[in-house]
Image (cartoon, each protein chain N blue to C red):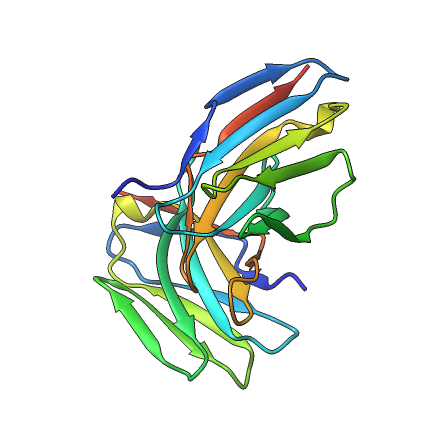
Length: 110
Length: 110
């Protein structure tokens, strides 16, 4: 069974641009979570989608947004990129208590 | 409320044992343990649900003390492959997002 997949693996953007990150959950999983992991820091919760709806968001500005599609895949959009947005963005999915992470997208803002 | 992990870092020689602690200021429903190697996604190790149970996976086991609102991860006879950063994540019932501690960096040396 395929795990959580994310694309692209790496993304380089300049300050002020927009970035779009994509995630496909494990087949059958309806919940998708986005986490940000800045260098040397832990996992900071960004967004939670379930059944196409945004269920919760972490302490991040509104320029971080996303959506979940009918097939449960998800997209994270970051507008007006800032240097401190450089981080590993991890997507995770669950269908119950167990949560599985994808390989992440490393976003670099220059 | 972010759980607190201790120690922040530990260095072990092969064959030595280690304990990583995770405590929370709020009641816990579940505790999830992950290991992340440098540049990779967090890998699920085990989940403990409230009830004070202890789980094990090979030489890695964990306990969950609901009353004390804490969990401990035990690594026995450590191997080089155990090196990485260990995160505990705490969850509520349902699919609510996990809240992670800042991690414990474990280095096993020969």
